[in-house]
Image (cartoon, rainbow, N blue to C red; front, side, top):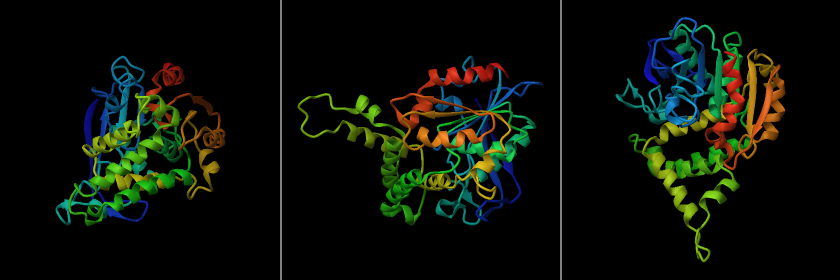
Length: 340
């Protein structure tokens, strides 16, 4: 996919009242100019991914694949607060000449979607033929379908929720506690601050994204005479180390708080009233082993979207099933794409 950046040279007021003098929004598109009449598929990415959907969803995005970048105009916007090009704690504060770090505004899902809408307008796109979002990408997709119901024609909301649960917020707080346990985090001297805390936080997050069966299948000890189990320990540390090479603790903290902002019904008379505003032909998908967006909770709000169909896929790998179960997702999404 082709990288772009939109610079907005007017003040941006965040939902919490904070203001930035200008805003940058990074995004990727299919590697061609949008052709006349070409259908638009818009993908909203998950928490620590980027706007190059072909990079993190290679099974489904790319030439000749389900989300065919040759046949359709595919767009994915890097959400505000992320270190992958959009305005974030890693951006330079013009008042200090240094990264914002902890001085960056609190970012809500609605703020993210307002950034997305700016890109839509800059591209001259009046209708989105198919909007797809999973996890916090699903938060954004739901919010956008409510904010601009006439723009979104079809939507898939996957492994997500209309309002953050206490259980998920508790997981986010565990991760923030890990960051705070690293004394370099609050010292906020540079983007290198909080690295050790972030490794621990990411390890906690990975556990929340997976399921018991997947860990047993992949991380069990191979030696029947093992004295102290260690394979899963090594895996958890590896995940933390790998993540620390590509992310910073301040963006991670900001995005963690963004998760806790998800409340589609805020100021709209409640979640059900908000969901009733969606006009898109919608599909809602859960993962049977997802512990942070369990099917029993998704089944409560999915029927509140008029005409929505609900499906549950199976996976050993919990929440991450939305990334890994490409065959099942293709079976669900291809009929929608075929009708574009």
